[in-house]
Length: 465
Image (cartoon, rainbow, N blue to C red; front, side):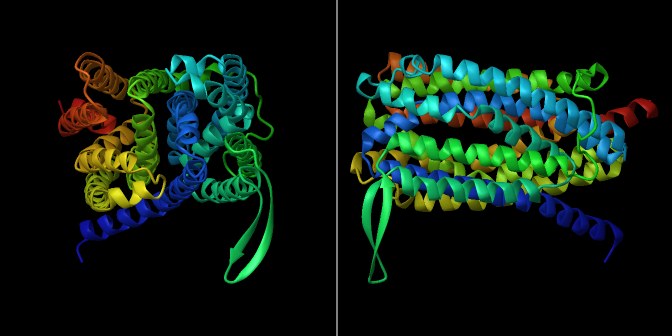
């Protein structure tokens, strides 16, 4: 076997070693989301709509906090790749400061605005109070949620994807166990011919919110303890005062990503509000289809984490050859995996919808839009890998520009014209979403082929000239 082939197989091994724990973690989160949706769905379409009505606002807050993590990911990954342990530990200390600041800020904002959120989302008046209560409970533990997001990103940047996965296991076990106890009333279960009495609080949607809130708290405590024990990037003994020599480059990366995620998530809010205006059936079908679709994006986002970490490590080590080999290898793997994922989604869309709803209209509508989006998955997979590599090397302005153009110039304008002006259905809204994803594929692919994503390649080019 030639040396390049050996290197390629070695690179594939490293990619999967980093990616599989993240994939498994996301798959478990999706499985729990499936269970949550199925449990709440068993209470009826109204309960499903109440929970799903504020989902996009959850994305808005969560993605803004995640953007802060991306800034620290780039710095920690480069420091780790360059074996600069003091800088890595200082960056983690500043990440701790970011957790405290963002956690407290979003707790106050979310709790104060919870009564207004369902109104802004054009939720049916009959379920607004229930949706507001669900949202309030879900954001009570925002501080540990921020810790889970940012500290998990810090650990992955140092190549530790297994610890966040293990913490995710406990979060999911806690969530499911509490769902059984809090959503349903006390009842007798029949298992394998035996009867077993199961206690329950019978809280319905409120019980689902409490279960999630407690699980988030467990996750935040566990991930914080794991970070403090880390041999390289632990912030133990570091100052938590603002350190601008570390914060400035982190924020330079984080702010464009934060604006991108805030802008796109705000677009999701506007998108969902227009869908909510189409009625309860469309809202339920959209909510369930989003839940189903999330499982089939797991390979893509698992690989994105590996791409960001390895690109940052290679950049820190100034290894131009490894950077190029990483890009070629991971793009091929990602495309093949997303073709398989999209194919499975297309084939089993009606079956997946049937897991969460028994209403024929909801199943038919959801299966239709899922089969539409399944065709576009390989294209979307390419764009998120290139975006991940850009995040790893600290270049977040380009993804910000591309995503804002796609979201607001294509998805939101298109959906507004189709649903609000022309009176078309949910299908037209998802068609606009697919057009948005295809535009991102074109823009990111052109950027990659021109070599603009790789700062080491550009540096070498300037030296040759």
